[in-house]
Image (cartoon, rainbow, N blue to C red; front, side, top):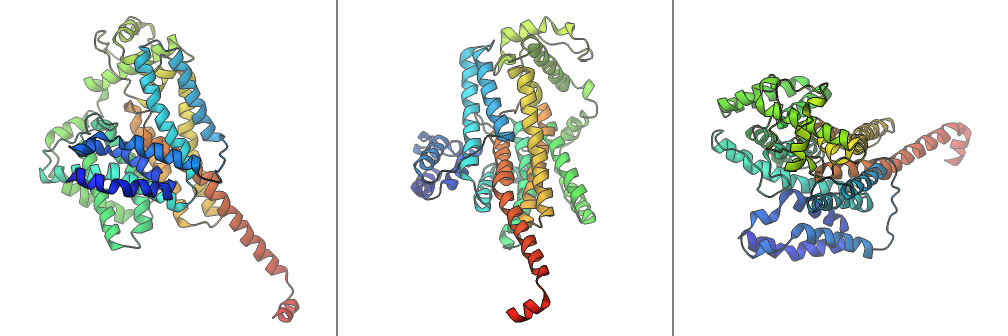
Length: 456
């Protein structure tokens, strides 16, 4: 049935892309995060939906007239520089070239989405459709898994879909935490217009929180706590927010098994947790890899190469300032970096890390600047809310990603691009409208009363 349904609507989706390229952008991110191939079983599995929608979107854009020009300055320029830097690090990689270039290709696809978001998105409708597609990808999966968790009384173990970009439960939980602010933005925009959307989004928010808890991911819980803390501080109804938090928390306690609390308790005793100290070891080896190749690092996935891991383990004691307690690496068991920062450091050196952190930091600051300028210009509430929630999503990624190898995630680069669209396409029009209103008001104030009576 799923196959028949998907194949039946496919011609309509293709037609929609030809009519409105921004729909192709939404389907691009939807297939990247949802993986429709994993939900079907028959003939529909033979189609590469993400490649199809991406190729159609790019093709329709190039066939269209009046293509907009994008100046690659600021964050956009840094993203381009980061891509060039990763290309050079791939050329000079110390690991297996085939593996390195395979992951370079994956990043190229992510940055292609980033570029075409900049080129195609121009208005609120485009952005909202794109965000709804995120809801129907990560949000749909979170809703289904959250319901399973509740129905099983907390016994269901939530994992990502095998072979998917969100296949790891830790990465899945971080993506869900990043989605929560987007849910709140859409709730504020569409909850007023439809009670169905209002209660649907409220229910989804509860299920997303439930699903994050159900993954038993400590990184996901840290990201969730950062989102909740930020929303509480910024909320004008703190008592209501606290009451809802207590109600939801009380309902969830009965579902959460004792093992979950034991696992979360290791956050406060990180130095005694073997899993966490294993990550610290990987961080130190990533640093050593960068110290040996300071400019371009080792290339994509170099740390996970068994021979490189073994060689780095021999120099583990040379950098005593990087404290790991009594923990030492197993030279015969390589691991991922388990941190977006150390991942980029090991993969692309200190230069690559500086560029990556600059992209992350500037996007966070620019989103805040858009919100501030919108308020100063008496702009629309939706723009202020969206900029604030995008800033929170980026913040959740920066905090939760500190313990995950998730530096090349489609969703975060798409959010970077939306911030740029808000700052350089939508906000300038709003500021010009504000200045025109101020000018018109000033001119009206200078007209003498007699002139007004004659004119009337």
